[in-house]
Structure formats: structure tokens, C-alpha cells
Length: 222
Image 1 (tube, helix red, strand yellow):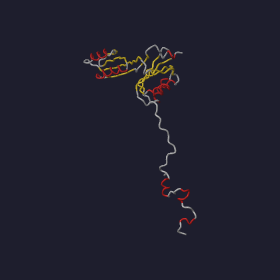
Image 2 (cartoon, helix red, strand yellow):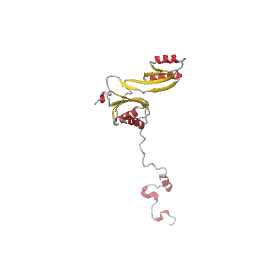
Image 3 (tube, one colour):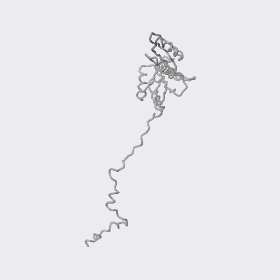
Image 4 (cartoon, one colour):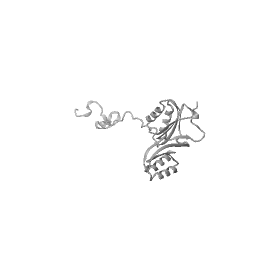
């Protein structure tokens, strides 16, 4: 009797419920290991940040109140948005207490649109318009001091005339030329005279006005 496995009065394990019993080895194999446990939570995929598209040159026009600190707030906002301003021209308008800013910068459409919206929310900013895709008159003024000698002075003056520039100062070793036009036209002139040597160069940055009868300044008149 001591050698009979059923002598303990219990049914064999494989007979319980009529189902075959798993061995101890099989049970330990099926148990999940601690190292392979699935994470309790899987986060959503990372969202694409806005403003990740193609970068191009944008031109913004801002009509602002002529008050101290406005220029600083505008430039600080652009710096906070990680924009490098290519040029910023500020001038008076027909209204004595209103100024006009022309801002050129590089960025993609979404990022610049968001920056323009935040710019409009600033105190003393009355109107903001992105005229990048609009038909505009775009001009820039540059003063270029060019190295000149007796042997090349005539060549320089010919280039100035063909470029529709204007000589505003003549000296023994230099010529100061005023040239106006689009940014591309000014760049082309500077490239032409660079071979003679440029002693000094200053550019105003672009000033832009939309073609047609629409007026951003009239929209802000009070």
C-alpha cells in the first residue's frame, strides 16, 4: 500500500475535472518574466511642431503708435520666436502719432503667421499684414563708398550710370554712390563694384507698399 500513488485518498492530478494537468516545468515556463513585462502606459507619438516647412523670405508691415518702447517690444518678440530679422525699417506716416515698420525675415509660413498674430496682440500695435505673396512695390536705398583711382574712376562712373545710381560725393581715393531698387538690384550693384573695393556700405532695408488702391494705413485711421 505504501507504494501505491493513489493510497493517499486523492484522485490523480490528471483526473481532476477530466483535464490533463500541466507539469511544474510547463507552469514555470508560461509565467511571464519580470524583465519582459509590458510597460504600464505607452504615451502618444510626439506631435510635429508647427512651423517645420520650407523657409522663405517674408515681409511684414506693422502700423504702430509712435511711443517709446514699441520697437523694443517688437524686436524682443521676434527674438523670442527665434527669428533673425534681416532688416527693419521704421518711419513716420501721414498721421503724426503713427509709425510704420517694415520687417523682413526668413521663416516658414506657419511660424511667421503665428509670429504676426502675436505681434498684433502687443500694446500699441494697431495693424499687422504679411505682404509676402501680395503684389508690392519694394525698394531699398544703399550708400556705397567705393575705392577709386584715376585709372578706374571712369569705369566706376559708367557702372553707376548703367545701374541708375547717383554719385553723391567725389574724393581723391573714393566715390560715394547712392543706389535704389529692390533687394536683388542692390545686391547686384554691390557685387559689381566689390572688385574695386568697398570702403563702407550702409543699407536702409526694404520699404514696401502694396499695389492697388487698398491702404493698410487708412484701415487704422481713427
